[in-house]
Image (cartoon, rainbow, N blue to C red; front, side, top):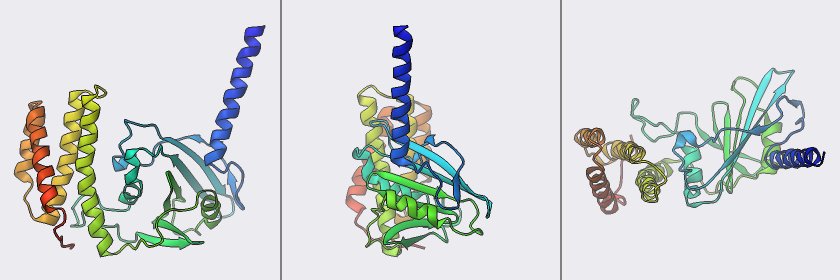
Length: 276
């Protein structure tokens, strides 16, 4: 009997803790005409596609959905709490990466998607593209998506979450060519930084060599793409060499290449680049 009571108390405490954590990040009631249609709870990390480095800390992501019966609009909200680790110095950069081209098929590597913009909502800067709102609030990332930009904007939901998590995107930020140039250079810097972060995890025995090699080559390849695009240095031979080293499991040669790229970057990162 005592064991049953203890188990019930543990479950009650766990449910209360879970509910409190969810309420800390999500609005779990209706918002004006938008009815809550999911309970709300753990979700995926929105920055996974931005190559956010998360091996040395733990982030917590929560998601919930609402619907407006009159307009037939479905609203998805995701709130991610980051741990204020060293990796989080790139948060705004990584959030913005979702609004930029990641390849050069149209000659726009690293440039904003056409239609991306920075809007002011009640004195809060918010990134907008298509049907998505995205902003940072210190170490919290908020994403709201309503699927169809032809429908009315769900401003009640956006304003409710801005009240809960005011945007800390700098009021001075302007998405102009000067900012594009800085973002591109920061992305090149971040790729080399990511290589060092993965190597540190390998040195401490937290990742396998095969994982390290793959990550190093992936990030250096992106660095080379940007270097070719904006500094005019052909990348083909370098990428072939990296691919061969990866196939040969040659960690020494790959790390030597990384040292070469870091040396080159240190000498050239302040040089002017020309945008298309």
